[in-house]
Image (tube, rainbow, N blue to C red):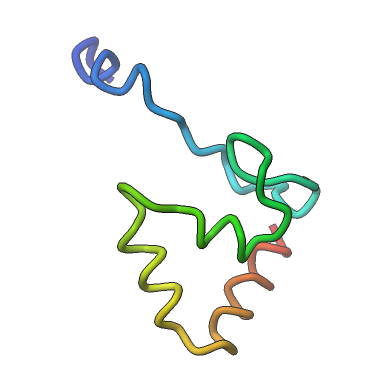
Length: 72
């Protein structure tokens, strides 16, 4: 990573790795989400297109994503 790219991201919140997320009782950088669904739907801004894609999934596919997260 160059110094310039580091400076441009210095004030950004960095996403924690998902490994072990099933063991976390509170989610997101502020710990304000208690469920995976809540954490996914809170993502806006730069992640809004991913949130919208999740919302367009069938309920069964949304549950499959959440079950996958529970396996990490």
